Image (cartoon, rainbow, N blue to C red; front, top):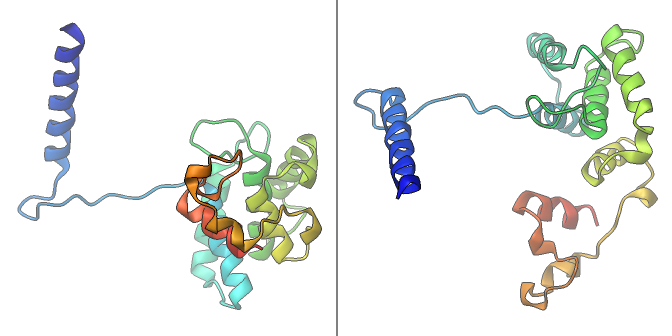
Length: 179
C-alpha cells in the first residue's frame, strides 16, 4: 500500500508541475528540445553533403555550443549529459568543427583528437559514425557493416539474433539506406 501512495504522490507532483508550466489559455507546453552534440554534428555534415552553406552567424553559435559542451578534463563530448566521453560522439564533433573551419591546431580540436586516439581512434567508433565518416571518404565503406535491404522483409516473429525490427525506426532507416 505504501508504494501505491508514493506513486500517487509522484503523479500529483508531476501533474502539478506540468500544469504550472503550461502556457496560460493555450493548453499546450513549449520548451526546448535538447539532445547531445551528435545531432548538431549531423546537421553540419548533412549541410556539407548537400552543398548548403551554414551562415556565419550560425557557425559561431555552433562552435560556442561545442566549446560549452566539451569535457574540459579530457576533451571529449558525451552521448548524454553527465556521461563519460564517447569516442563516436567526439569523432563526429571533431569532424563537424573541421567542416566549420576550425583550425586543427585549435586547443578544442587538439584535446578532442587526443581523447579519440586514447580510446583507440576510428577503429572503435560505432556503425553510424562509420557511415558518416565513409560519406566523407574518411572511413572505408568496406569497414561499415552491410546488411542487404531485403533484411527488412524478415518477419519479427522469426526471433533471429539480429533483426532489423530490434532497432529504432531511425536506426532501421539508416541501416537499410547504408546498404
